[in-house]
Length: 384
Ligand SMILES: NC(=O)c1ccc[n+]([C@@H]2O[C@H](COP(=O)([O-])OP(=O)(O)OC[C@H]3O[C@@H](n4cnc5c(N)ncnc54)[C@H](OP(=O)(O)O)[C@@H]3O)[C@@H](O)[C@H]2O)c1
Image (cartoon, rainbow, N blue to C red; front, top):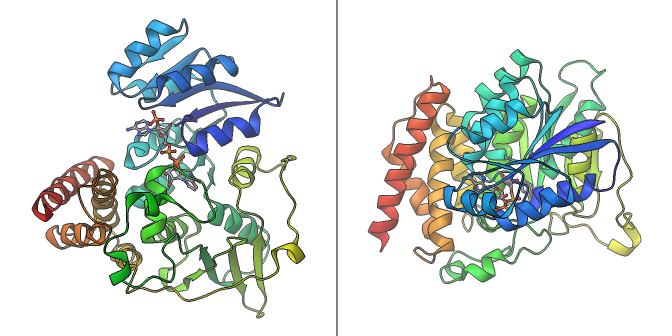
């Protein structure tokens, strides 16, 4: 029996994580959390017999508490309290954005294994998060499909000499605007940007996929998780999203991980590792798929990927600045306060305005995140 705590349970990943464990007698869900979506959260708590939840937004928490007889935690320390008092074996962090970093830190500090969907934790504070996991003996299991694929591929070569894995490749669907020129992208709408061709996801990651920032965040995530140098990480566009990742070995072999795009597969892998469980979904039929195609990234139309790669290579606080500016820019685009092309402009302006510090702590990263948000917000206002 695994005691499982799901944070961000009302989002796309959270809902699918509950679906994976639903009806299984080897999992007990011991806590859930959301930001504002209290009605869905309480419905989940009732369905899964959960007695304690955390709601980040105070007003939503008050409504949840008056409608439900379980315990609703709120306030700045509520997630920490939920995590540290749940006696969980595994925390699934499916919160979106750098708001998920605190939960990652608390879970790992408590020595609890972490199924990590919140890639922003590794982008903002990757070195510190990896060190903390090692120091506390907690396992970090990636939920992102590409990193789940890499985790499986890389662990299959664990018995080999160091250096056997020469390169890793992440695939990118290319998003809804694949093949478009920069001029074509000037007037794209929020609805078009949200309409991802192969994955159904939350709003922020859908926009990140449309700008290819998501792939940039994933390259930083892969660098942190697997210790791979940036010079040995490739990105290739693969519109069918069937091949999730590939490793290239010293004997000239390449191993790839394949499957239909369905997040329940990497979620089940992260929640059950080192075991595998049955997941009811269509099995891959290559004859039916027909063709798998691959193409190079168009950095001119999608400058966000270049910005992320440069920030990753710069290291220090650069990825934290990149992430904060991106969160502000994406929120502004979703609110129709800036255009699609402005997103890269806002991020670049913020990265240029702030000096990168090579030595940092969790506390100084919080200050850096705040400063970057304020510069990015000013840039959004200046763009009108
Ligand atoms: N969706 C995917 O297919 C996918 C794939 C790979 C990786 N990921 C990663 O997984 C994470 C979650 O993505 P998602 O698509 O599931 O996002 P989502 O659908 O937007 O859900 C986000 C969840 O986080 C909660 N939340 C938002 N802001 C919060 C805050 N300030 N404090 C506490 N909780 C907060 C939301 O609560 P409310 O419902 O109340 O707003 C919701 O439960 C992201 O880091 C994303 O990059 C997602």
